[in-house]
Image 1: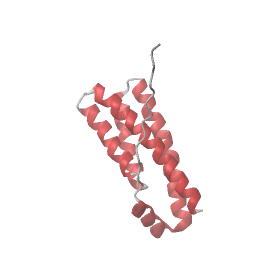
Image 2: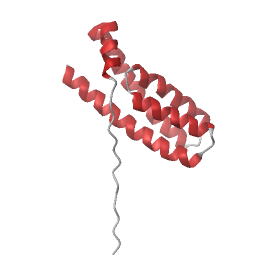
Image 3: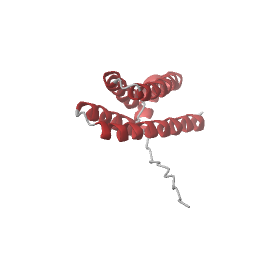
Image 4: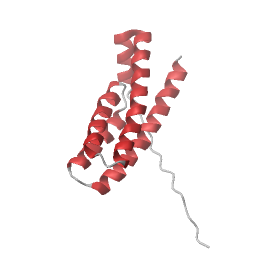
Length: 126
């Protein structure tokens, strides 16, 4: 009998709390919460769109989507998401399909974990 081991890949994600604090200081509680909620919705939709572009082989759209993820992630202090989204664009630019597959998987994992982290933080602060 063969044994199959399923590896669960998780990475610790760290949010830039200074960036979030800056948003709250600049916009006030209501304004910052509105910006963060919209950014999280956009990020979730963009991650889904990015994955769909990859599955459909639309690399130009995938690159555009990854670039927009960078801006959204930086806005709310998700440095890891922004960093890996940059790596995805680099893989596309380098025409490295193997690295793209691995890096996109990492982006989706980190994106999901970051969304969970910031939602938990939002729930805790309310």
